[in-house]
Length: 605
Image 1 (tube, one colour):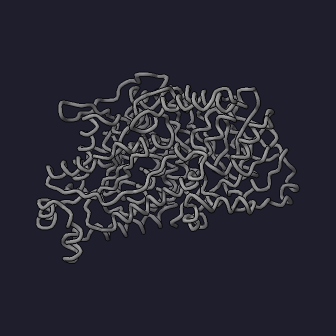
Image 2 (spheres, helix red, strand yellow):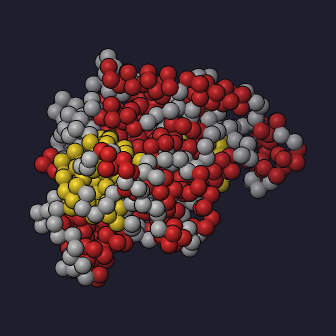
């Protein structure tokens, strides 16, 4: 199938925009790749320190025989249900490496925090920055410089982008990502969401709500809705950085363990293959475009309009929101997974999962097929669905959709366009996820109510002050102001207002991921209010029009009056409270140096 013209044009535009930075990146990568193995290149004391803790047989292999040595970067902790399964992965990896005449070491661990735990709490203000902390931690671990390949163990929101950014700074290493899979289906996401609205309205108490939440989040594995964590896994499949089809296989089975062993075999296959393809070569502009297309086709998380800008930058590739927007115009929505539908990721996997989606996109010419992956047969391998074959694995061909309420062919999509749009206007540039928003709510025009924090909005809702058509403006939530937290706590009250028949929308320089659901939400507004952005000018009563059809976000006011309006300053008390407690003092430098959301919210540039 011939490549779609828009996909080709966007790819070429990215290639031209990135020519200088990409060339510099590849030159550095090639210099690193040409060096001898660490055990030959380093001093005797360095080598002795590197392998002192290894079993004797492993030490002999790596020091004397110079067999490949794999560095394991793990995001294991047992606070996160998604990462708890990683506890025993290193032992499994080491055993498999020995069978293949190689060795493996846990090079280091990276922090992994859960947005579900910190939601609405002060700790959430560390969440976005944890991505770059993870990238730096990955770099620290790999800087021991004795590895011939790397395996990345991580799943959740900031962990995968952080690991990927870190890995790309060691782009000379063959690298495979290993997921842990989603938890089994518990209480449905729609039932959980409904109970949260009832709790916001005061119709159920804490005990009832906790019981429901505990039935939804009940065991090891990723949360089952299609948020940032599971979008990460879809994108890694589309980039060819997993063993094909491993994203949504539940943890705890022998099959899951065999898929992990296959990751060891895959990364060592790259090391020993003459067609050497380290991660810095795999992740090129075509690979990045494939990831964006997969995101749009599945209605994935808006967080990736921040994270993948940073990921691409780590490989010397320059992308922006216009690239996402242009691709969204031609990429159809072919999956509906909560919050874009009723199905969870287990139902998505059962209906065809990533293999079905990638097959459809390739066959329609919407993804690049001429790309490198961590597998010898390229991206077509990722159209298969893995299954256990005795003690091994085989991949079944993705056939027809097993449930067309969950996945559909490109020829009969849920929507002809992707679920994400960029809005522009006198309030700046922002992102809206419309895949879950009913069409009659794609345009909202209502008076603004301005809040300086999410707590203020919650208090106003509790006091009954929002029972009317309203555009809630929540500012001082950008990267500079307080680290750009997720504002998921706002969803239940806004849904409650919507259910009463009011026209409701949210405009913020903070993040909302996919949690806004049916609420029209213009998020990531850039420039942010704390950087002098237009949100700082908005006053209560200003009429705001959010138009997802024409892609406009603006205050309906005389242009001269708007130009002459003096922006508000971030309250000193708020700035102080954002900077203290819960370790936020340690992140002052990151808040100061961070780039805008549209530039990837990078702290390392």
